[in-house]
Image 1 (cartoon, rainbow, N blue to C red):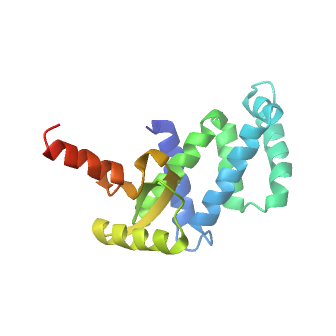
Image 2 (tube, rainbow, N blue to C red):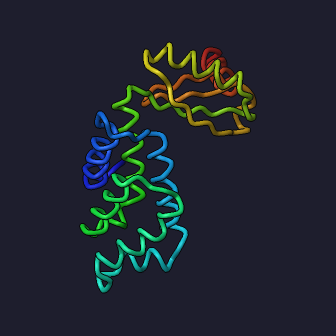
Length: 181
């Protein structure tokens, strides 16, 4: 569950990224936000510095600016990070990124789908599943794939609270239920 704070900040960023004339690609913005989040989470020293009240917000912005220069972060995203720093919300940044992804997908009319299969799926299988789920949901599907060897075969797709179970394990469970065992 996303926090109110993360959702509020993410909403503001989605407004900026999706604003007409912003020149920002939502997918590229998400990739950059995830890169920045990984950078912060991957460095104990950076995390400590950004969380420390002893270091001025101006110094934190300068450090972050130097780190962001090589990845060419757009001014809107950089300025958003400065607001996060100034309001001492760096600890919430991973949640803000997650909320940004959810809210951007909603505003773009995408439905998020978790697809689990027993084995890795090839590109044509992924495309076919995406087309079928998009048709079922009535919106373009954004799929996330994972594997679970316990499924034996087939796939399980979770669209919100709805589960489409096309796995061998699911079929065996339904057969067991019908046979009364």
